[in-house]
Length: 311
Image (cartoon, rainbow, N blue to C red; front, side, top):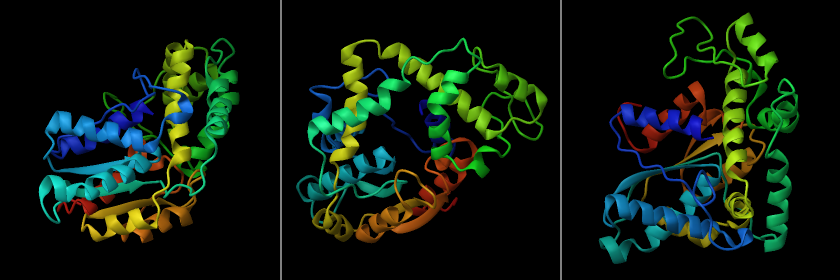
C-alpha cells in the first residue's frame, strides 16, 4: 500500500540514499494502455527502465529493490540490463550495484489465457471497490478481513504498533490513530489500550481502498487497475535467463518469508538458488517486511546485499 511504502523508503532516505519510486501502470493515478490482459511484466520493466533513464540518465548505476509483484518486475529489469550491459557499458559492466528481491518467485512456465487472467483479476478486485462506511466498519471487515489475515501473521498483527511519523505518543504501543469514519469498534479499541499493528494496518488499508474506490469510477480506470494486477500471471524468469543473471556478477539477495500465502517459501528459495543469490529471512507473512517496524528486517537485508557497512 502507498502509505506503508512511503514509510519504508524514508528509511533509505535517512541513510543518505537517493530514492526513486514510480507508479506502475494502473497504480495510483497512472493509467494503462491497451486491454488489461495484454499488460505484462516485460512492459512494466520497460517502463521502470525508462523512468530510471529519464531521471538519472541512461548510464547511471543504482541499487534495485522490488517486492512481491515489484520483485517480478525487478527480475525482468535485471535481465534487460544484464543482457544489454555489453552494448551500453562495455564488457562485464552492468548498471546495477546490488539487487534485493523480496517475497516473490520466478513465476510460472505456463500462463493462463489473456481472457482468463482478466476475469480472475476482475473477480478479485471489483468486489472490493465501494465498501460501505455507514455500518460501523462491518462491510469493510467482511471484504478485507481475510486478506489482512492472509498478508500478515497473527502474532505480528496483534503486537503493539510502533509510533508512526508525526505521532506524539511515547508510550508502549505507539500511535493511536483516529478510527476510520463509522468504525466505532476501532475507535473504542484505540481508546481502551495500546494500539496494535492490526488497528494501524486496518486503517491504512481502509484509507487506501477508499481512495482507490473514488478513483476507479470509469471503465478506463477499472481496466488500469486490473491490467496492472493481471501482469503477475504472465511472468516466468526461466533457467536460461536466471543463468545469464547469475553469471553477470551482480550482487543479488532474495528476502524470504516463512509463511507467505502468495509465494510459498520453497518457491522463494528456488528463485534464490536459480540466481545464486544470498537468502535473507525477512518475515513470516507476505507483507510484514514492508510495513511499520517490520521494515527493519527488509532494510537490514538490503544493506547487506548493497554491501553497506551500516548493516
